[in-house]
Image (cartoon, rainbow, N blue to C red; front, side, top):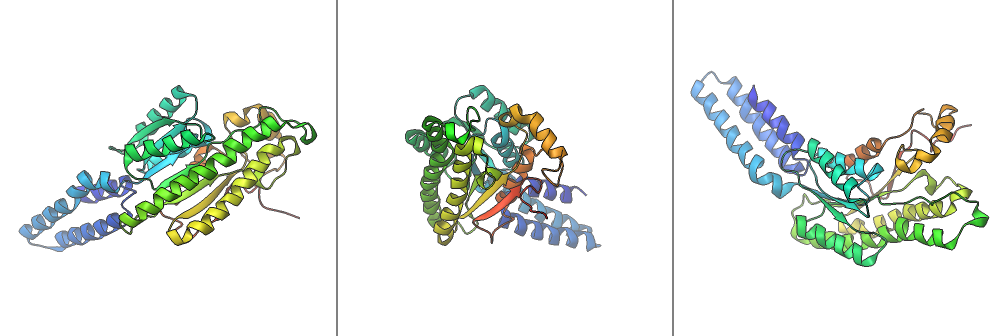
Length: 325
């Protein structure tokens, strides 16, 4: 029963060719059933030969032609790293952006490569999304490396250097967080959206690009000791709505994924605090979230599972957002 296994392998690897994959599966299924149900050995061999003719082109040329491409900012560590690895696992080519730690980026690249289907392309690019010239170069490098872009994941973000009372917060910290967490993704999305609109004019109907913004429960849950971070994430949430409205007519969906308490290096210094809060019922699901939890949500969008949704908030927070009496 080798052919069903071959079909299953192809279907798991080529996430980009959704329509082609479905048609191929149907054609193979018909041929396979015809071969099994025939008592004529010659007809069975003919059916199996036809399956080969269907499968081989897909396994050679179609994988590169149809594979979808994602750009993930802040992909060297934490949530961004997990997102990039999950997208690679489902068969997307990925441009993995980092700002300073090249060693971490290369390690993430190797980890993604170890689980990605054969032929998956994984590139890394150093760029500070807060810098206009770096954003322009990042888009140009993605274009030069892959020639297309299907998904932009605005993940890069920073926390305050230290938590301070709102009345003692500095403009320097505020400006830095807003530039990285909000201004950067705002204008990177603008550049990418223009490119996606150009691609919509030349690519086939299966080209369904999306922009995915990674925010935080801090978009609505106020923390006076890190007001700059909350404002930046609330702004990113509004940005999702704005771009969703503007790009809907262009066939580009925009999503917000809103993580809760996620175990990363960014939350390492408050681990004891959140351990106690989770144990005391902070979230209905009593555990820390992981980067992989967020990565799976991004992968669901990338696999085409939410085609009739845009401007949607996807909570990955263990139920933190639920209100109770």
